[in-house]
Image (cartoon, rainbow, N blue to C red; front, side, top):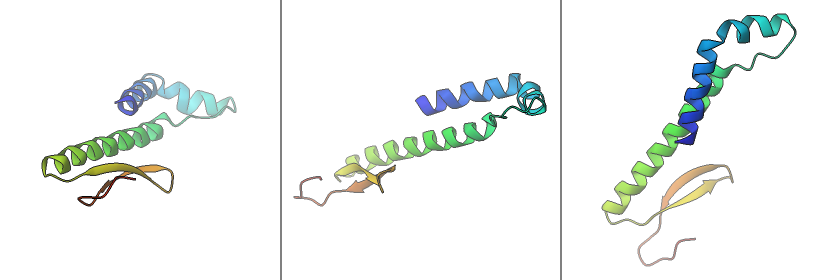
Length: 88
C-alpha cells in the first residue's frame, strides 16, 4: 500500500509541476527528477506485492504451505514448503 501511496503522490506532483520539473529545472542546470518514471517503478512494485499476497492466500486455501523468501537477497518471492518439512 505504501508503494502505491507514494507513487500516486509523486504522480500528482509531476502533473501539477510538470513545466517546472521538465523545463525550468533543466534550464537552470538542475536535475529533472523524472517523477513519472519513479511512479511506474513504485506502481509495479506495489502490484507485484499484491500478486504475492493474493498467491499466498490462494495457496493456503488449497492446503499448501507457502512461505516468503528473498531472491538473491532482493526481491521477495513465494515458495511452497513440502508437507512434513519445516519452513526455512
